Amino acid sequence: MNISTITENEINIAIVSSDENLITDAQSALDLIMSVEYETNSNRIVINKDNICEEFFILSSGIAGEILQKFVNYGFKIAIYGDYSKYTSKPLKDFIYESNLGQNIFFVNTKNEAIERLKSIS
Image 1 (spheres, one colour):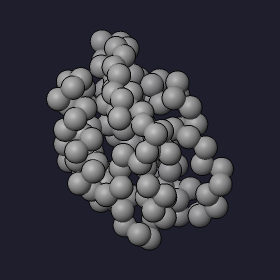
Image 2 (cartoon, rainbow, N blue to C red):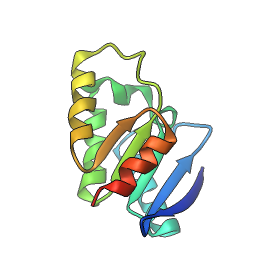
Image 3 (spheres, one colour):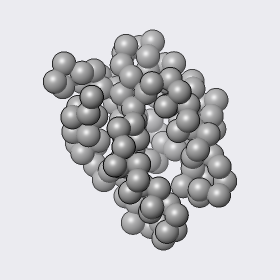
Image 4 (cartoon, rainbow, N blue to C red):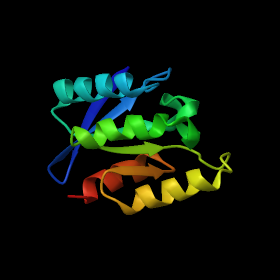
């Protein structure tokens, strides 16, 4: 896992990358949160959707709720970027749409969009 930091509008944003899944369950999400906080002193994370287990995107599994609740509970904001076009589930599309209206969790297409989202919220 590689964690780099950029500062935009006086806000530290952690960019997380890896060749493997980093988030597979609530505990691995918590481990990532703690690593980012320790290494970057940031509460904003940009991550590629390919670093999250595929079950996350099957809402009926409940994994997405468990994982994202950790981010909210610990005051973290996360922007997940990647290609979502292969997903046809209406509940998932609705979930992504509603998340993007909020202030904590974002699903976008590119890393630059993810950074823009995280730097523009309070």
